[in-house]
Amino acid sequence: MARKLGWLLGSWVLVCVIIMGIFGHSLGWAAGDKAHQAGESEGQDLIKIRIHTEAPEAEAGIFHLKKKVAIIEPPQGYVEVLAKDSRLTAHKLTYNQSDDTARLSGDVTIAQKDIDAKAESMRADFAREAYVLEGNVYLKQRGTEGESAGATKLEVWSQWMQVEEAGKRMLARGEVRLFQEDRKAWADELDYDDDKELAVLTGDVRVETDDGGVLTGTKVVINLSSDEAVVYGPTYAEFVLESDSSTTEDDK
Image 1 (cartoon, rainbow, N blue to C red):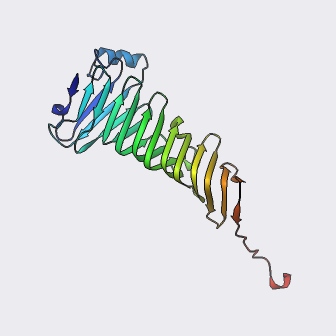
Image 2: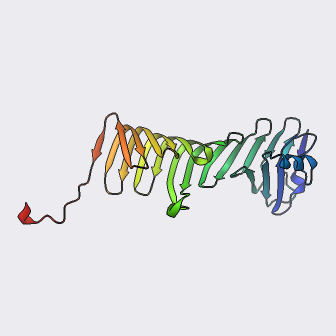
Image 3: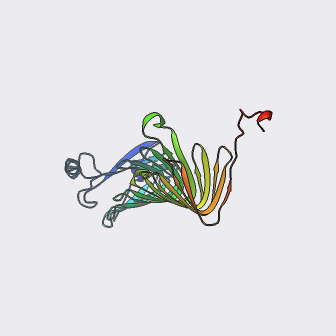
């Protein structure tokens, strides 16, 4: 059985759907629902879905109550999902409550405490807080401590990316570009561990520094805390040596 929501929506009306507990009998999204209140008191996690649309009286979504699946695609609008510490938006959402997963497509964005990302589509596993982004992926991570708090820490572009642990772990593949304050890198794959401050680049790797240095290899491991790089495989490097301004013609 499907429940259509289109008749609930007016011009820029905001619909909030709280999905929890049992999709079928308790209808956990209803305001003031007892199961909803009990779930909150027991500390259950909630998935909140807000539907934004400009089209009055338009069909915006279908809820399959027995299958516990919601398919939402509002015309002239977008879907907003609030899950734990993440805010997701997309043009279309398919949510499966049974395994707490979702598929989002169309101008997908994700915002967390210290990261922002966007892609053409995304698979979300809310239980594991894991997200797989596909198609023209872009991610920006911000600093969280000291003077760097709020400042851009790194930017990554790729065609596929998996993000876990609130952006602390990242695996990117396909036309990978990594930009930091004083370096740029290109690779086929990037494995990034924020806690260990390690960036492992593999494939056709090229690293360029702002002072003109160039480093290439089949694998480069960058220790972001010590600014050291370990290179594997055939390597090519260029180093720009600064002249000593104190040297005079008589010293030569």
